[in-house]
Length: 327
Image (cartoon, rainbow, N blue to C red; front, side, top):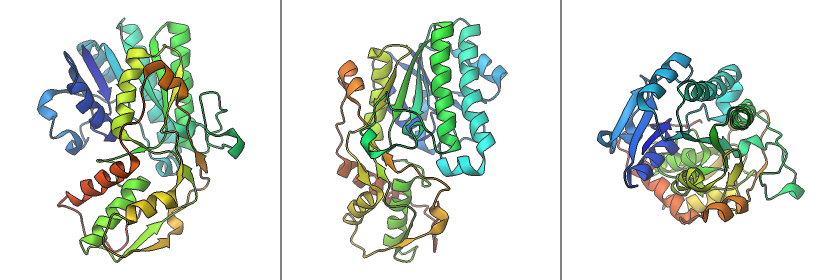
């Protein structure tokens, strides 16, 4: 079986590649760009088949699809950082929507029989009222960022190509996930990196934070990518499924847990530059539909996830000195 992972060199993509390589009779292909950093997949790169492909270019995508002719596509590539979507809304919308459209069109034109998983996001829900939690597939979509809007568009485009063109597409809406290799701009990894900089004497003993009151449902990335795999094995095409731990904590609680795992005394200080124009306050998911369909559940405790993330940053030898880290 040929598995194609877009965004294979990214956070979730690299973990999914590891998981796919461990499955029997699977060849793993991945799309990269000429400037894509390969650090996340350096340890497995000899086992992968990498194709240079600009997903925003329909001709590049069609050529890659014709050459690979995958049996499974996991579409993870995206501009996925919410603050960047505020700074570059047009680029976020164009990148995320056009890339997916090009994949669907290439599959259709090349007549490739393939199962496609679309990685949506809990950011699609946006404004959620407390009485609407925990969030399931039937909650209204009220995105509060250009990124959230782009993911809603991807979600609906996937449904449309299934309904109109008969493509086998499963949509997933994963809630916050973290773990080793998480980019330093994302909150859990940003805090972990700051703690390690402080431990190494490269930053004053102060962590700079934004909104600590938002509720988030965190799952280990290794559990999430296992869920992605199960989605194409057991889920119904055209359907949408929430992937979440079913437990929510505030960003402050997550940080407090992280601070118990370091021997250094650290001050927490607010940084106005980390606040967003509008922020999603509650993301707490209900994965009952997905669990019933696949038997999936979380296997990695959140405490281990946070410890593994801290140790990931502790293992890096090239952390630059910094007085004040900003996301």
